[in-house]
Image 1 (cartoon, rainbow, N blue to C red):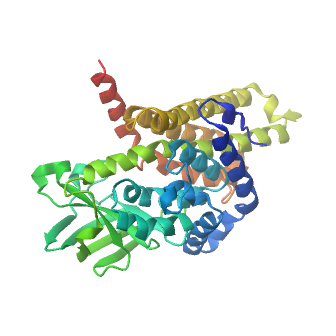
Image 2: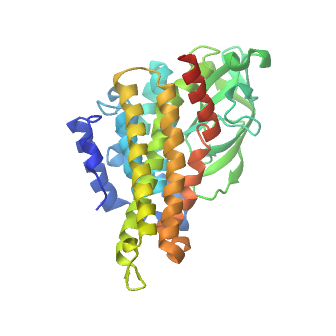
Length: 390
C-alpha cells in the first residue's frame, strides 16, 4: 500500500484530501491496462484517456466552474494532487490530464467570454483535446527568441513558422499558440497568444516525433495560416505575460508528476527488496540496500514538501510564486531521476526488462528535467530571485 500520510499535512483541507483519495481509488480501478493499450495504439489510447478523465469528472479541475469545471478549479494544490496520483499509476494518464490543463488555462485566465464558452466546457468534458504550442526548433527555454510570426491583416492574423516537440501534436482539436506580432528588437514584448483550431487551413502536422517515453509529439508548420483576431488572447504584446502566468500555474505540477513517478519507484523497490532473497536473506536486510531505500524515501518527502509548499503559496499567498515553483520543479524532477535509477538498481535484471514498471518510469522521468524550463534554467531563476532579495 502506497504511503498517503502526506495528505494529513496542513497544506490540504478535507475537500482536497477527499479529492486525492477518490482519484486514487478511480485510478486503481481504471488505469491498470493503460501501458499495454498505449503499446498497441498510442493515439487511440490518448484520446480514450481524455474521454475517460472527462467522463469521470477529473478534468473539471482544469476549468472554472462557470464553464463546466469544479468550484476549486485551477487550484494548484488540486492540480498537483491530480498529477502526482495519476503519474504514480500511469504516466500517460498524467500526460493527458496535464495537457488538458496547460492547453486551456490561458483561455481561462485571459480569454474573452466567447472563447471561454467555446472551448472550456468541451475541455472539461473530455470531448475536445487541448495543446500548448510554444517551443520552436531554435527557441525552447528562451521564449523571447520565438520566430513564428503573426502579421495583422484587417481583422485576421497571418501566421507563419514552425513549432516542435508539441505535446498532443496531431491529436489536439486546438493549439494555444505563441507568435511574434512585434519586431525581433521588441524581444519578449513583441509576442502574442492565439487559440488556433487544428482544422485551420495552413496548419500542418509536418512530422510526428518518437520519444523515449510513448507520448504523442509533433512538429507543426504554419504556412499563411489565417486566424481571426477574435482568437487572440489579451492585447497584442501580452503573449509573454500570458505564457509566464500559465507556466507559473503549472510549473509546480511538473514537480508533482515527478513526485508521482518517484513514489511508484519507491513502492516497487520496497516491495521487491522485502520479497527477493539473496545469500539466504531478503535484500532489505542488506545495509547497502537500506541506505539506498533511505535516500529514496528522503528524496520523496523533500520533493513533496517543496511541491506542495509551492502549490499552497500560489493558492493562498500570492499570484506569482516564481522562486517556489522553480525550486519545486528543479528538486522534484532531479530527485525523481535519482529515485527511479535507484529502483532499477534494486530490482537488478528485472528493472531493465522492457515494459516492467520501473523500466517505464526510467523512460518517463527523463523528459521532466527538460520541459517547461530545464533544470539549468530553474537554477538561474532561483539564483536571480535570491540575489534580488538581498
